[in-house]
Length: 497
Image (cartoon, rainbow, N blue to C red):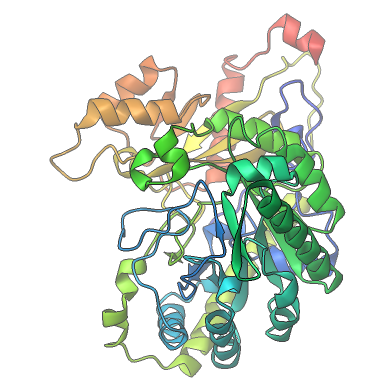
């Protein structure tokens, strides 16, 4: 694959643009980290926006019980088409989880990370969780092991996490204020009893903060997840970001609330609204002055398999795994070759980005404004998805000297099959609404009808960059628009800049 060259030395712009701090989680956004930490995370698909195009992850659902109740959570099984945390199709024993992991790693050599994230809380199921980790560390030493937790049982689990060489932990921290916590968590289960409201939230927050400090003191990397709940903790998350950074967390992932009523959550039933994509981006930008922000999270199922943004779990159900013959010793040799090839490509790409660039003098060249460009991609860092088949769009902000990844916009696919491409009007309207703020959309192919409606909505469709690397394509499109004078800033904006 051709490797793009994008400058990362953007000056400040009035519109934020790529000069805003915390531009995604590309190498420049992780540049403040010591080398030994950066080397652990720059090829981790759940931490690096760049690496997630190439490396895959999987979750095993061995932890059914939970020790807190969240107003945004409903752990519903047997819902294979639903992609949100806490949802699984099969809860497994540790033995089954190990067998599945070996089968997936042999079949998908790009898979580098195994995480336990539910469907309950892994540390509320310590025997099942740590037996899985113990066996995997022995039988699959080439796989990185991670855990995600609400943090209530974290302090008493730190020694065991360190024992099993778990060097990446994610803690969900939605607040550091018990009054706000009481609006998010109805109760916790603590010392064999339910504790409600502010008192329960206070205990949870204390345990989360204590666990965070204990992990970082051991050199264990901590990412903090936070769910953005409009009118509840949205403004407060700026304070959360400052505090967790001060205590050693290296990355903050602010995720949007998922609150569709059909999911059966308290927030969904009570009509709590979700944040808009632009509200989420604004909050992430506000937090990024204090913390490196993760923007490529897909809020995965607790049994997700594959690249971020895809789920191949149906290929690896327990009945199918029982029929597979896995020679993992041989698979590890092949996996090492694949990993080395990907790593070499990424290193070359990073070297090109870091190389000095020649910048022409601006002279009387008009100042141009940043724009958002949406991409339809199936992965691999290229534009390889038909508009009608896309279940999400990757959104980048591009300006005259660089770009930053803002996040993904989920949607229902416009075409569900050869004959249903036109259930169209309602679905297309929802897609256009999800693309609020986007000015250009790049896909491998776009049909006539959606093309016309996208244009009416002020979004310029473009199918001329099929199979091109995303970064090359967005640079080319931006430069074309700028050369045509379509991105010139008005005089008032120039003066403000």
